[in-house]
Image 1: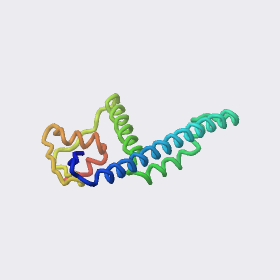
Image 2: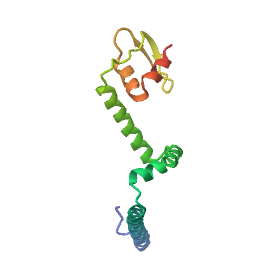
Image 3: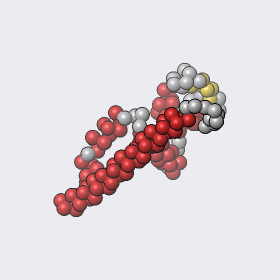
Image 4: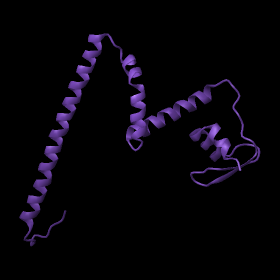
Length: 146
């Protein structure tokens, strides 16, 4: 920030910046308290699992439906995006490693309903059509045939 030396409001500017700094220092302290609380919760969770002889896998299987609903209800969260990317990659790996013959789309035009882009398949699938199959799955893309 460039301030003229003749500016008579320098003290006010300093006060405003000090106030912002104090707010940031408080936010950092609050963040550290939350991290400490989360560590305490994680330790208590592990202790409870050990105490009752429950494995993490058993616990997560028990709350799986609740987790699924929470994720579906929070589709704008970074966790949802991260999980979506993970499962898309996992699905691609399964498709690549499968020894079964890959299904092929019939010759024709395919319109993506989200973008309204039309791609025509003559002999081989164009790259964009292959991308759609990777993103949305073969079963979905084949329904886009016009």
